[in-house]
Image (tube, rainbow, N blue to C red; front, side, top):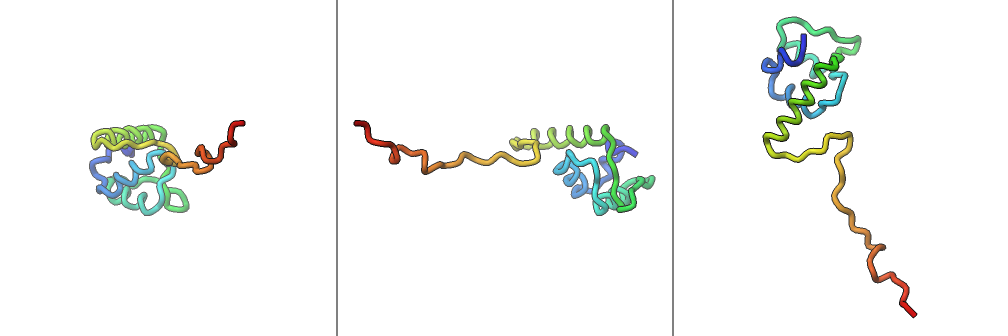
Length: 101
């Protein structure tokens, strides 16, 4: 079973979870259960009910996520933490300069 071959069988919430967590190698049991309901053949799970994705699956999901965000014009930084906006540093203003002699 590959994610690519069953992508269209997954419900929208499952596809969205996979795209939102495109770097995940382990799929939690709730999402794994949804994947198993959607596929004709059962997907092997570990003792916790989780699915381990192959490198091919991870690459496919990452490409789908990048394509989806690009199609909607959403700028998204694909990393563990989104960058913060510019910070205002009040201590760096000119009011605290020493007067020139």
